[in-house]
Image 1: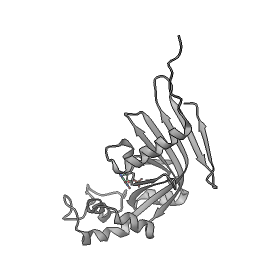
Image 2 (image 1 turned 30 degrees about the vertical axis):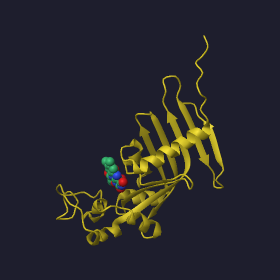
Image 3 (image 1 turned 135 degrees about the horizontal axis):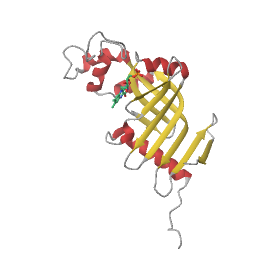
Length: 205
Ligand SMILES: Cc1cc2nc3c(=O)[nH]c(=O)nc-3n(C[C@H](O)[C@H](O)[C@H](O)COP(=O)(O)O)c2cc1C
C-alpha cells in the first residue's frame, strides 16, 4: 500500500496563511482571531492574561495593535516589561498562532491620535468610565457615565474620553503557527533579529 499523496506544506505558505488570517480577523468580527488573549508580566512578577479586540495588523512592519484605557493595570505592566505575548485560536481550522515582541503604549502621540480617530462613538463610551479600570468598588457599578448606560455619547461629549485612550502596539519578533490534523500536526516558528533577518523552522508538534 502506498501512502496517499499529500501536498507538502511549505514554511512560506504557512507564514503567509498566518498573516492572511490575522489581517482578515481585524475587520471580520466573526473570525475567532478577532479576540486574542494577550499575556503580560504582572508588576508582582506573575503572569497576567486577558482577552482584547485585535484592532490592526500590518504584515509589512509585523505590527499588531489593540486599544485600552490608559488607566488600566496592563498599561503599567507593558511599560515596565516592554513586551507582550498574544495567542489566537480558530476552532474551525484548529489553528493556533502565538506571537510576541517588543511592545509600546501610545497615549499622547500621533499614533494614539490616529487610533482614536478610527474609534466608533459606542466604543468611545468605554473611555468615559468614571472609575479607573480594575479598581475595587464598594458596590456594583457599570462604570459608564450617567445618562449613557444604554446609549452612545455624541461626538463632542465623546472627546472627553480621549485622555483615557491608549493604543498598544507589538512589533512581532516571534511567530508560531500550530495546525492540528489527525494524520499529523503542522507546527512552525519564525524569529526575526534586529536586522530583520528571519529564521524559519519546523517544530516538533
Ligand atoms: C470579548 C472581550 C473583549 C475585550 N476587549 C478589550 C480590549 O480591546 N481592550 C481592553 O483593554 N480590554 C478588553 N477587554 C477586557 C479585558 O479582558 C480585561 O478584563 C480588562 O482590560 C482589564 O484588564 P487588566 O486588569 O489586566 O488591565 C475585553 C474583554 C472581553 C471579554
